[in-house]
Amino acid sequence: MRSRTPDRLCAEAVDVALAVTQEAAGPDSVGAHLGVVAEGDRVVTHLFECLQPAYRGWQWATTLTRASRSKHITVDETVLLPGPDSVLGPEWVPWSERLRPGDLGPGDLLPTDADDLRLEPGWAGEPAPSEEGLPLPSVAEIGSVAAELGMGRPRVLSRYGLHTAADRWEEQFGPKTAMAQAAPANCNSCGFLLPIAGSLSQAFGICANEFSPADGRLVSLAYGCGGHSEAAVMPKPPVLSPMVLDDDADLDDGADRADADAAGAPEDT
Image (cartoon, rainbow, N blue to C red; front, side):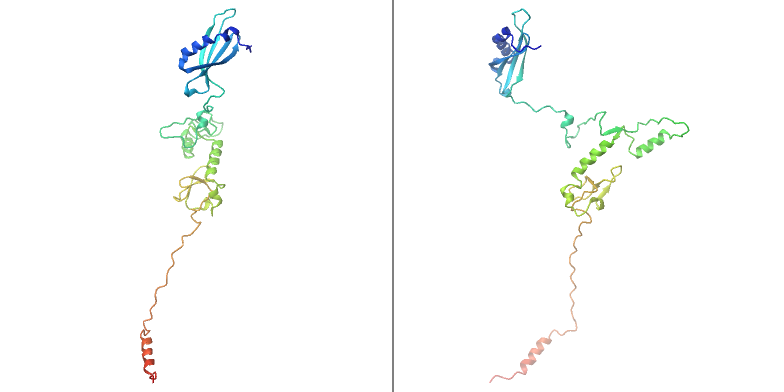
């Protein structure tokens, strides 16, 4: 059981602990004595201030001990430990939890666990066990069907993998987005939608409208934007009527009438 009271001889050996600490860390890195901590029976740790600027608030810890019925002090170890006011880095998080979409760059390799919930075994190329009285297809026939269905791979998406992918895509380009809420119609009726194959074909497609924010992206059929092919019709420019000229009209008729009126008018007296 760990003793709560520091061993007297080990606790009084401050000079021994200081000399050992200065030898390990350098005299310029060791500051004032901060106290002692009882680690167990006849085992005491001396704490010294760390003067290195990069380790502000840290403490040098030198552990001393002695054998039973002996007054000879021996040294266990000297380490640098964080103090109550030291600056620490964030808690370590495994890389699999730190990884975010878009982090994978050229040349990077992203391993997947053997028990990854997003994947399940595909067709391994082995024939199924035979059953009495039932003819079984050959391996070649099974392989051609598996390749056609996209199953000729060591692992394929599991139902969990499909659901998580669908939820992720729908969050970005789904019916609950602000763009879809303000859209005049859904992608299901848009001429720019490219259909996909597989089990998600009834829920997703690829946008091929270069002016849409979802161009080249997988979108929910319930998504929509203002670039819908049938949302608006480009107004046609107005067609002006052709000018009509009356060739039979006498353009000088007005001038002749004016001359006749001037000739019949009474003279001024």
